[in-house]
Image (cartoon, rainbow, N blue to C red; front, side, top):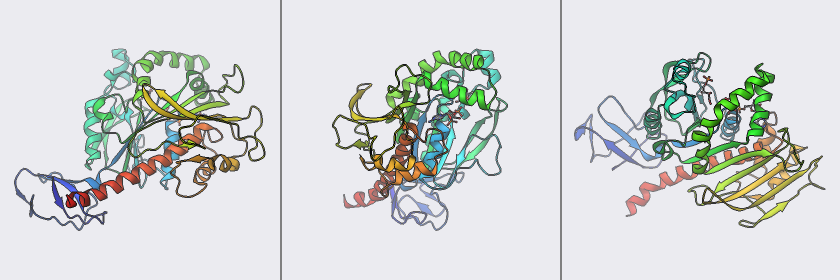
Length: 404
Ligand SMILES: Nc1ncnc2c1ncn2[C@@H]1O[C@H](COP(=O)(O)OP(=O)(O)OP(=O)(O)O)[C@@H](O)[C@H]1O
Ligand SMILES: O=C(CO)[C@H](O)[C@H](O)COP(=O)(O)O
């Protein structure tokens, strides 16, 4: 490691690691102070040397869920927290799965399928099976991006079922890797600064699938049932166990307010937040660490049948201490959410009412009237806070080092 002064997007000195095959290269050596006046990233490849500055490093977020479980919806909420819309890479493959905004780049891990649709059929494996995915490449490329180096990432084309020529991905401020396996491979898992798992119960998954694949894509009820059943063993073997590694889990279950209900319209949603995660402090209701049951319906919150019930308290999840915030039921009037927001703490908002504002802004997104939208919005704000804390700690690091 060497200290260098960097003039780029950062105003503070950054700690840089310099790797060079020879001591002196293109006007600098490891003892010199290096000045850069152009270029956003302190990385040069192809010239035989590489400089990586910690303040330039990408923050990596993992989002795991089965297909059709709300990953895209969550990504839209997260991107919105940072402002600006996410778009596919300009002028690239129209079937690219990547979404880029000013701050975030979201890559879909389906792009690391090593077997295309025909290949999987021939070998008799599903896309959920690790044998159909290239975890070595996933690790190398996520690591490179985290270190500030651009990669040529493959593209899995969901329209044709083929692997298309790769696309260039430049290191963003925040990289989100979303898909079936962000926490499956330990090497990839260790690169994550924060991980989230969307845990949708079978009943609700089925209801959502029917809604989308039957109503919007013209699939038959039988084919939807068959596809869910066919994925189940591999889902249970390879996807579901990733819950244990997640820093936060959003669990979506049928309501308990209507006995025997499994229509999937009214939902009981639990936000399970691991304790002791660096840069992440769980949200709480009223009093941190207490166990609380709260029915907010009445003068300040309009609730039609079956009402709304909140719960908050400590629990154990896969042997880890967690805090759980739960909401069962749905909001009648989204503007009244401010009443609920005012009773929640540690939200990482920048101003009073920011959660409500975000929810109102995207009232047309699925889940906006229930705990799925509320908790996805809260996690989006927590990720912004985590990113800002990591950035601040990196900026402070060289100052600490120089004091030593
Ligand atoms: N919170 C929600 N409440 C109700 N329905 C939802 C919710 N989230 C998602 N859905 C339903 O599930 C469908 C899939 O959502 P979304 O596209 O966000 O999931 P996905 O995980 O990105 O899917 P895929 O991986 O198949 O692209 C939506 O069209 C909607 O019908
Ligand atoms: O689980 C999936 C994505 O999350 C898909 O089933 C997988 O990527 C295979 O895609 P396709 O059905 O387009 O061949």
